[in-house]
Image 1: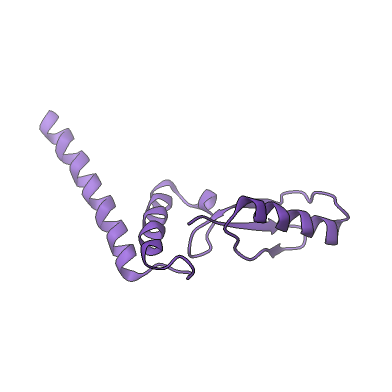
Image 2 (image 1 turned 45 degrees about the vertical axis):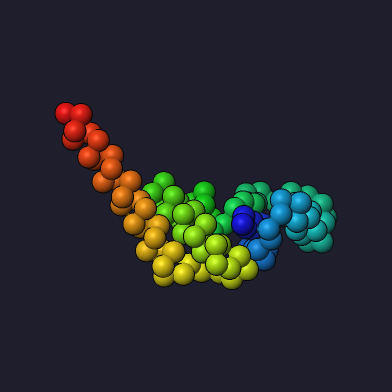
Length: 111
């Protein structure tokens, strides 16, 4: 399940997590109308976050892949909670480690 947040850097406020892009647009529009008279603040941000509340765009490539896998595994059990289950984090690490070992094995065999 995808999670989104709106962030106004002028007011230094962040919206609660929403699950639909339409709800994200409504959050931003309501904030702009209520506090900024409809004007768009400089450097406002809206985007997808993981279950820990981190912006995917700010994560590194490997950490971002790990977070997406752990989010997907955690969503298998419960889509409404936050945080990763320990087994989802371990599973994501195992999947990434196995993929790296497979790539390394294929490259070693090719050489």
